[in-house]
Image (tube, rainbow, N blue to C red):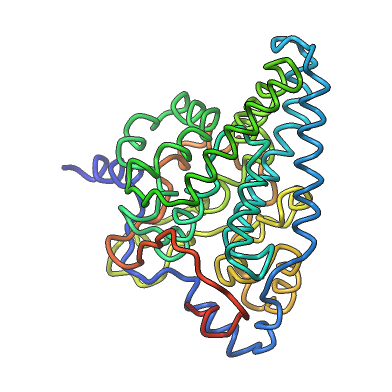
Length: 356
């Protein structure tokens, strides 16, 4: 294999690293430098009110469209502008709730996530939690982190058209991929999630006398994970957008490739500050309202890190830039652990729990 072929191979392969994921190391350093950071941890009471408002808003919008054609511009315009933004908000509410940050009781969080799931149209909150917590515990670990594209995706979508398809239908990749990587046990909470969602969908159709409200909710979920400004966070969080030199790819190099990126722009207002993603991975026990405080408190740790200025630009660059694509992810062979679906009672957050 000549030098050009070797360079092409590296360009179209994942970034394999042998370093530890960076968040645990930085978390310990921040706790040592700013012990008061632990006071930021714990549930945020405001979350339940925001979720209730968005759930009600989506049901109202669906009911208002009960006599509107699915193929009308009004149906799709409301679905894109309001519906997709609202359901992305609910996706990220469920993300927040999965870290037990709406209530102190883990059981209350699990049940409330099912309520937040209602306008999404399909049951997924119960399955999301173990997959997402495994993503935290096993960041970049091949075969455990289901946020990572598979080798098959890397081959099929390694082109401009492929990446455009990937971005347009990324909601399906995030829904189907986890089950292809590993399966979580089906527990009673999964059954409750399915039964409640089916009952809600049936009641919505029956009480309105129309399928349009349910179609609006499902369309909103699809658009929320498609070419929508807020959907840029799916790509922005962990795809490598920095120029990575051959030296950085060398396994002997101990300088970690940046694998988490933050975004501090206005779209955080409707997405539970998920743009503060380095901060979130460093301290998953800090709720969305306090992530800006964390960023300010530990500024010397976060200011030097790479960041995105626009989620729209993230999607644009992902599709058109030959140096960014499905394989622009850091992977590691070993480490991490799988998180099951058991409910644990959480009384108070301690530094030990934060570190874990």
